Image (cartoon, rainbow, N blue to C red; front, side, top):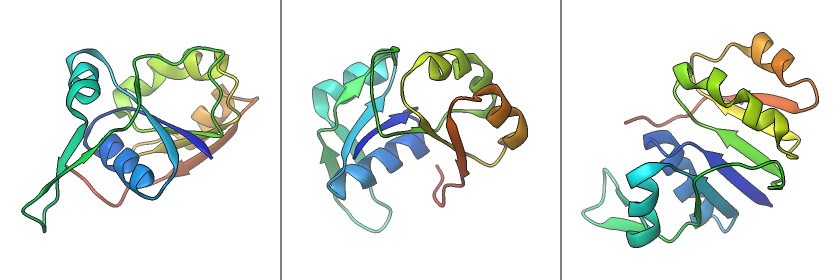
Length: 127
């Protein structure tokens, strides 16, 4: 299964790392200096209950283009950023979109992506 985690904040990075460690083909969409940092040094996460820092060499992209094809895109961005990425999601070929968050406007988001299978989830971890 080819997965994109769209958003590289605390929740997005944690989700990408867990999917990657579970053997999934996952790519993380990050931007700017953070994307460069992950590409150079890997995704580094300090677990709460372990003295070690895990390093995962997750592929990173800085944009989602219409030709990119994934089985599912997990959207893990701030509530205030959701509207700004809808056109990018709409233009992409991927049919399965899962919005993760606690301030998701389910009816409005589903209606704004009528050609997609829009689903919603809530993350059980936070920063």
